[in-house]
Image (cartoon, rainbow, N blue to C red):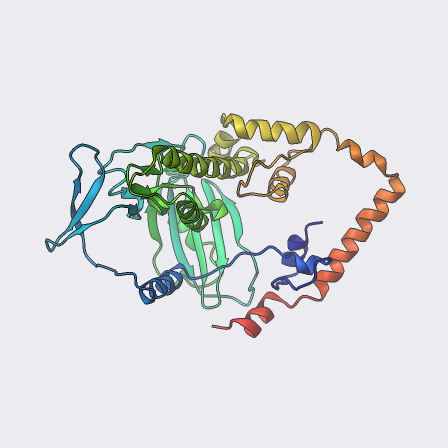
Length: 371
């Protein structure tokens, strides 16, 4: 009864049409794209708009003697670059937010224990699906993301339960086509900075924290952080009340997304493997426990403010991973059994009919954006 699910299982895809009363008018979708090409595109857009890019390595950071605000950075060639506001996009190392300002990091690995990943592209196959596939493995999970010219693959795992060599062997043994490179390793600690905005430094991307890629949130958090920065853009006073409000908004979004990803691990029903047993038995944040209990007792899902994942997303994970409500919403009793049967049958028929007129994913790509 979810239109995107019905369409995906038939390998159908299209972007929404201007039909407000049809499922074809409210298709939710996201993009699979080559991140390297996307970054190159954005760089070109920015430089064309007047952004000046300085290549080089930062060797030292200068701070105001009293306030501790960052005043400038010095490059390896001796050039000093000053500024009023600094965005730290230096990745996990957090050159300004952590190495300079020592903001601190909140470690979430007791909830999200995967701490390594291996990524490898392989040759594309005719099975050009319009979705990411995530598959459980002994010590984590494997992704498969199809692009036109290759398929992206990776194994996200916990090093407590498998060696790097074993993980690489598992990944390479489960590709759709020939590997196009050696597996590329990545190490991380899930969590976030204790402050996303500290003094006159705003951490963006991996410098602000890392949520493992199970729900592909990294690029969203970059965009969301920048949108909120525009909303709370400072003047020279850097009003601490405004900075605190920015931190509160970003923290809320991170924590709610964290809870949704933890749910995938907590609600697993795998009976084999120490890793998955540990995840099933682990304590979870109160915010997630309350959400699960509300659904289990009353079939209700409460979405707070503008948290990233919708009611439908929560429903799909909880219901399909075995969290079944004890009772249904009492408003259902306003309809007779016959009316309910007619309503759900009609809904399914409308969804099936709408999906039947959609082109296949491969056809849509070939017609609109062939590489």
